[in-house]
Image 1 (cartoon, rainbow, N blue to C red):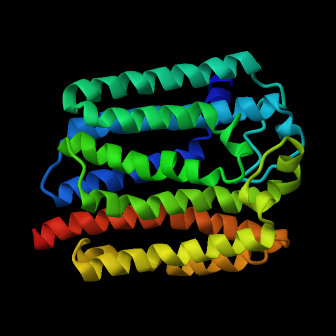
Image 2 (image 1 turned 135 degrees about the vertical axis):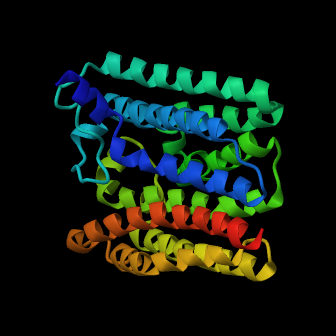
Length: 298
């Protein structure tokens, strides 16, 4: 019973994002003819531990700020509900997050030694995002960028570097849609929590610019990622197989429709579900596009 609660505290349904990120970053390296299975599996373990640290520490800080007592929980927002229910002790949860971070850091240090110091800036930035996001960054007026970078773009660059020991412009191009998608993942999930977030000093985009403008920011950015891929395919910087991300368009359209009607929970909740599908499938399909590009064009 207790073990199941600890597992739930990691918010395992969200950890699929780390798998998708690792798959895309490694897929870009595969396209360039580089793949080391052992590195990929160890990198996945490190990324999952870092993601667990993010989820657990976010839960802890939200409990300490009393935010969890003000939000209405949904399958996509509002925390795990474990600490408000008294199922675990806050101090234990805090150390669970710290230990997860330290284990991820140990894996990161191994890769720095094994693959080079070029990985260090990414890991330092990731560490800052993990510990500062909830207590500090969410109070600065536009916090979503940090999530987009820390849990979107940087893991892809890190996965790529671990395979190739270098950074290239194609890898940077590939990581941008993921940064936008994770940015928008948080953005859409913040609409139900606008009132609660404002009471504890958070300044998310829906709060700082208003729900209507924030919904348009979300919608425009979702369109941008498709033009980004199409443009770079035309320019020859992405293999043509990457266009399979267009298969996610039906989910995106439904997510945008719900975002523009964010005040209607009956439309927003399905939009949040479709948004999750886009975030995961877009990155997996983009990674598959690179792998197919190597198979058929390499």
